[in-house]
Image 1 (cartoon, rainbow, N blue to C red):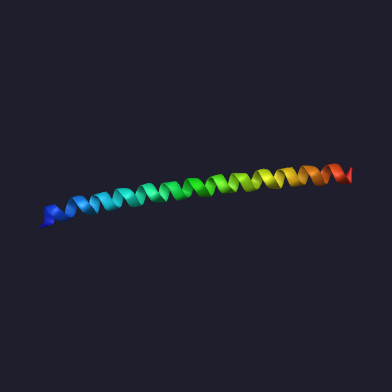
Image 2: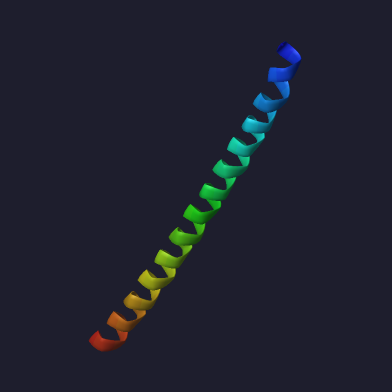
Length: 50
């Protein structure tokens, strides 16, 4: 019984770790995109006020 539960639990744990890593990567990509937009907006504002 223990042996039959070990493999599915390990597989579930592996899927969970991969999913967390993927979500973290998406969050970093979204953050980088937001920073790029913020930088562009700041540069545009600087050009308009000069």
